[in-house]
Amino acid sequence: MKKIFIPILIFFISASSFAQGGEKMKERIRAQKIAFITDKLNLTSDEAQGFWPIYNAYEETVENIKSVDLRAIKMAMRKGKDISDKQADELLQKLIKAEEEIHTAKLKLVEDLKEVISSKKIIRLKGAEDQFNKMLLERLREFREKRNKNRN
Image (tube, rainbow, N blue to C red):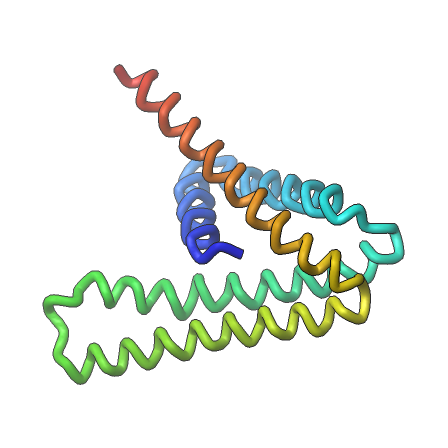
């Protein structure tokens, strides 16, 4: 999964949550992602029953790391000019720990998925995630362009 996807998705979802339909938008994106990945991987019903609980647990873990740990780190990083070397070292250690936790979650995902789907489908999963992220970013760009055009 591209490193940029989750922060942009979080931003998109956070921005839309200020509107009344924020939660609805989050669920629509999630449903589209599920349909997209299911289609790209061509999962059988048995594979899907094993795949989605594993994948959802992985996404929940990574989302938690990013929304709790990395969000706090990034907020502190924005104040970078105003922190001491000691604080910067501590911040860097927290960043490394969070990135390691994400990496560990990805490794666990692959190991767990090997029990359910083929290695070939696991490789296709990465491609499907990248395609979905690209599509989501493109839609976000189009939305912004349309919004800016309507303002003028």
